[in-house]
View (cartoon, rainbow, N blue to C red):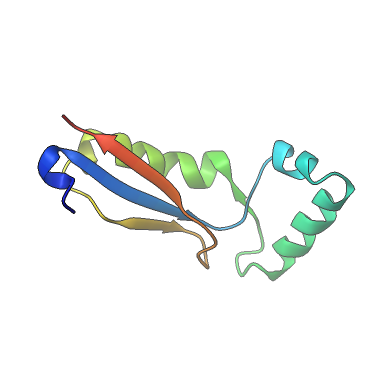
Length: 91
């Protein structure tokens, strides 16, 4: 919170399991099996997609609509898996 006085806000996005063709390819033959098995245990029945689950909250945190928001975590998952840190210098 001490950075807010200097015009710097720090917010987080807590994504669940997010997949992309690159993510699947990075795991080689295990990628499809790993992401497929994970999808089965997610309550909503589908994996997160970058364009659906990460872009909108990122754009919010970088927009003027977020000028008075700092120190928050926007969860975009049925269960927190990780964090994407957004730091915006408004000076």
